[in-house]
Length: 75
Image: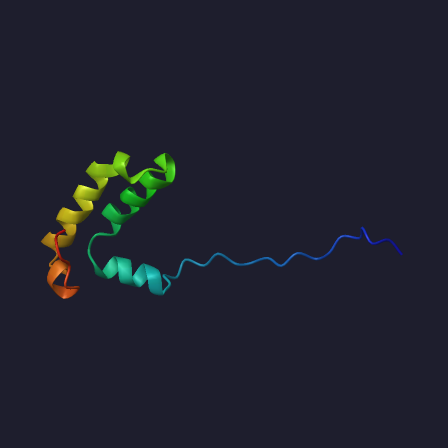
């Protein structure tokens, strides 16, 4: 018997149901801005190059009233 035999691979299903993280992000009203900010960082690996995306997220966050809800403080 060979040790190189194919082992069955576990296949995970990709469901379309939002998980707890998705629900939290969607509840902020800024999911699109969050996605753009994360995509920018993923592509550039440097937050300093994503200032426009970060500012758009920050403005959305304030517009939605999330800064009061989460006790956000401007640094």
